[in-house]
Length: 158
Ligand SMILES: [Zn+2]
Image (cartoon, rainbow, N blue to C red; front, side, top):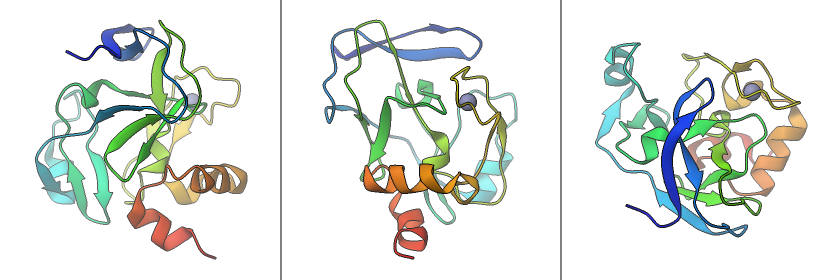
């Protein structure tokens, strides 16, 4: 098990990842791992099955394993995905704080939306594709380099 985080119950969202020590901005927290699956296979996963496949290409997903599968979404994240598969801190994360990233930085399949219960002051209510984010949020995430490359290629240089 990692010395950086532990898995605990998270209010309203099932299990989540919580920092066990101060994580400095820029620090790598984990690598997302799991078998590569297609959009069709991702859609066949039972809806009640925990976990959300991580999109890494226009039709490619990682069927996430532990511990990456337990990382929850927030509309006000303290982490993001760098180089498609590494979870990194985008601000200092205090011990005991839940580690969360914005799922919309990985989503561009015109298929999924998820109801959001992150309770942040800027909660968007619905987790949707990157293209549906407010423009300022898109720019911020692109500048932080925490948008999946296949999305960045489409949206990054307009
Ligand atoms: Zn939210």
